[in-house]
Length: 233
Image (tube, rainbow, N blue to C red; front, side, top):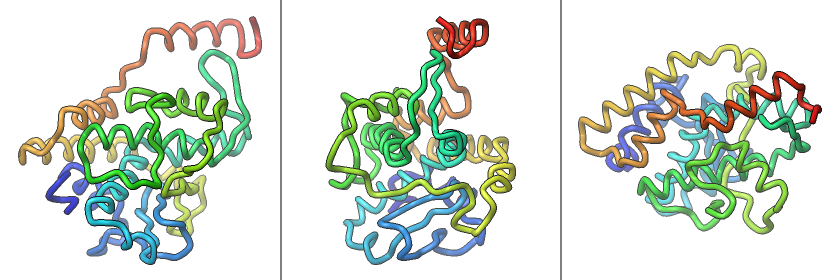
């Protein structure tokens, strides 16, 4: 179903998230609520996962793949270790893993909904007043942390790098080759385009992974932060 509806994600799943080269391309365990990823494995709870409709399962799997494409497990680790999330304008907030997970989910889910990939499960997080596919996960975190939305916490968890394979997080982080991921994403775009199954929204999102666009405001914020220091006025 994933191959039929979104070959771009299938290409990444079998080329980058299947280290054991298994037919199912996933680790099945009851140790995660519904779904999870450690940046290099798709991890599913079979007891819960297969209660969803086929279209919802497509959405959940695509969701985990996007977490890995965006490198969320590794990018969030320094904030988790320091206990703080620092922003380009010099401000910072305490790190809350669940809030970070929700922030990342908001961005990813809006991207998948706009791209028409599968069906959005009711347990998922989606609130365009907090974040859209155009936001960075840090922008989303700032809004989520301040509002602290109640109720939904999503259907997945972000694990430390390499946790699914029992690897040391630091070594797993060092072992990720961004060049290989960029090649896989480029191949995914080409594969989906060749089949005529690459929505414009998804093409733009994956294209930005290969050629990220930094807003001019962020350039200026970073410039002043470097010149005056994070705590200076």
